Image 1 (tube, rainbow, N blue to C red):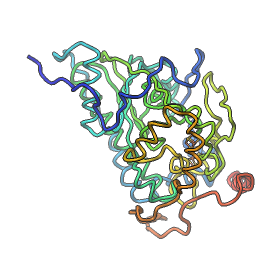
Image 2 (image 1 turned 45 degrees about the vertical axis):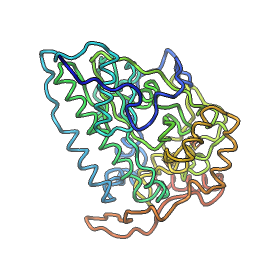
Image 3 (image 1 turned 90 degrees about the vertical axis):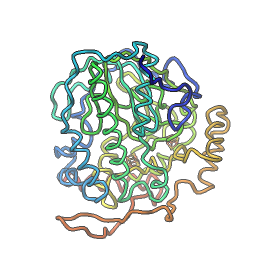
Image 4 (image 1 turned 30 degrees about the vertical axis):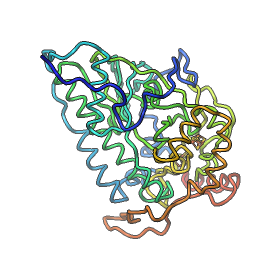
Length: 403
Ligand code: SF4
Ligand code: SF4
């Protein structure tokens, strides 16, 4: 007799089970969404010199110039090179019920310390048309299991979001989510089902639509990024695509569409002024999203002279809170009462959320230059002037980059 059933009720650290589920995402996705290529990602364009020689040089070091990020990035490279076990030719004697399988793989993911997990069917538009090297990608798996990993609230609280630990925060979630996806894919392959892991530098799929469809978030103002009700935008995602029979989750509605419309704090605080202030989303590639100046954001992340990468928009978002104490009640209220949204944004500023709390700063600001660590001249890029004046400063930097 095969024992070992995943328990009923909440499996992970956050109560995903109590969220309002809807049949379709709260932002429009049409029937004509075209597949995109990872080759066209901003970081890769910068690395090929399409944004000027300064960013081409910075693209090879903007993560590894800071020692915490460099250490994790090295780990991630090892994961990418790991060979997957061949799919076993005989199916393991496990239950065939898709609901039981879904709870089982989620329980495994939480055992491996994922923060949130969801499942969706894999639409073909979420499969990249071409990879980082511009090679065509094909993938016909039926399902995607999506894992979110928190980048750490306390570290965001101790920093500016655009300083020297910024790339380290991303790398922490990229490497942990990559580890989980690789273990889960290798486990499923041992059970006799096809499975592939997708994580930073090793994606065949585009993560935002999968996070959206698997009920782990809604579309946010920072163009194309998905925001989770418990982690806010403070996560990175990985996935396992598979043919193991699974039961998809439904998308969620926690009121973010209206919240982002009235908030705009990320647009106000973005050092490169790349985020839209518009009240309305646009239709891009047959889906709704807010416009984002991808080139401006890439320029800031790759070429930030005052830090390693940038996540200032994540730092200042009012949904970037620890899920504890009073914040649980606030989150519960925001989900249900849209009239509370404006008040919440106002209170967020009034109470000083989004500022640096130096007591939580645990890392050293260090920059590697030609093999030697030194104390950098600048720490953190923030908007010091009005958004309009800031945009002019940004345009001046752009001219430098094209010389
Ligand atoms: S430049 Fe920084 S704050 Fe602005 S969108 Fe990019 S990551 Fe966010
Ligand atoms: S800062 Fe405000 S507008 Fe921007 S993503 Fe967060 S909630 Fe939306």
